[in-house]
Image (cartoon, rainbow, N blue to C red; front, side, top):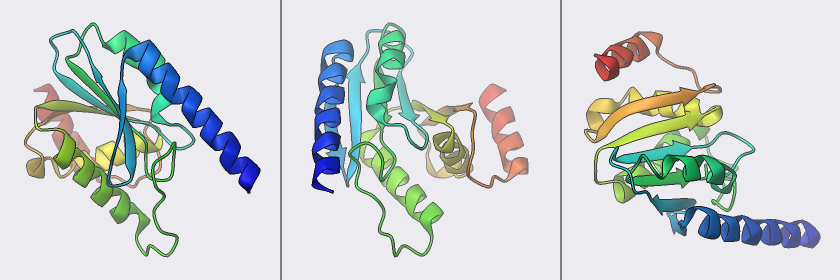
Length: 167
């Protein structure tokens, strides 16, 4: 157990160093959710990325480096329990609702400008579910799903959102 923690800390320090040096990002934490916030030099606005299970924000350094010339700001968060984000309590009765509460709180506290939300794998499922409540998130301007998985979705609502964001 102690060795696992030590190895985890070493890996995290390496990832943070890479994020700081490769993409010029700063690591922060809101309500137990760890994230990297990177200033870009493009004019396409803000993009927020939610990685999938078994992935963390630091894994996205190369993608962020490629997005910097196009976007003004790139935020990549760790899902609760991944990277260095605090896990959700094991006695939580509704894990899906708690993920949504944490992500909604995170975005409401950190993102005040219009943004595009990107989700990969389980993060994609969460983004799709989050977008179904888009009327509660007036700054959400679009979503991009990369192999979304893991969350039951209301397909009629997704079709509506697709028309809204593309039309």
